[in-house]
Amino acid sequence: MTELISPPKPFLRWAGGKTWLLKELENYLPENGFNKYIEPFLGGGAVFFHLQSEVSFLSDLNKQLTDTYISLKDNVEEIISELQHYNNTQEFYYGIRQQNPTTEIEKAARFIYLNQTSFNGIYRENLRGQYNVPFGYRKKDFLNPEQLRAASAALKNATIVQRDFMDSLVDVAPNDLVFIDPPYTVTHNNNGFIKYNAKLFDLQAQHRLSEFIDEIKARRAYYILTNAAHAEIKTIFEKDHDRMIKVSRASLIGGKNAKRGQYEEYIFTNVEPR
Image 1 (tube, helix red, strand yellow):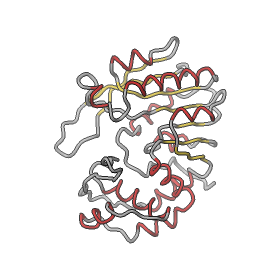
Image 2: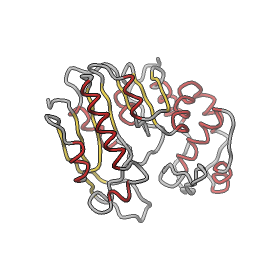
Image 3: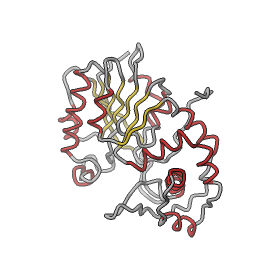
């Protein structure tokens, strides 16, 4: 594996990403370390890239996302070469958005390009499964070859799979660490939480996630869960002897003129405080 001087940054923009957690992540890690790292809601992978665990199992239900990670891991130079032919204009963006490439290289390049040049990096599909996020008018360069190379190097020892989070249990063993970051919005924590999260990750899925955590604990592994600071979430995940921490952070979701402010989230974990 290529030696990395510092942790690489995520190569994707991802709504609900956990970059904000990194500066205090040490407070939630097992004092004596852990064996494998397992992340069943991969998204932008901020925590994975920060930790650079020797053995990692990464997964997500979004097949386009996991295929992009696999392609970047195995074919980073080819993806960079493909992206060098792209440009950040509205016309080019919509042309790429309507394409349906057939090769893994083209698919990964398209996914990265759309993610970097779309409105807020949101991943959204219409009822026909077509990506439908509008052009973002970003001035930042969408191609950072060194960032992609660093991410590829960090992924070399990772196993990447498309699957439901429950299927991650096959990889969980004693002293492993499972980082759990399900999809949720924090802007409606107190008013409309259930309505606005119904399509992201509904309450039935949250109850399944609680069962997932019970099984992790039964296997004597560690978990760290991030979730919305809402009464329903507290009821579902408040478990005997586990820690529940309410944190406040600034929301980064929304356009230039969107209302942004401080929002609260929960961190649940069975890792003992240091």
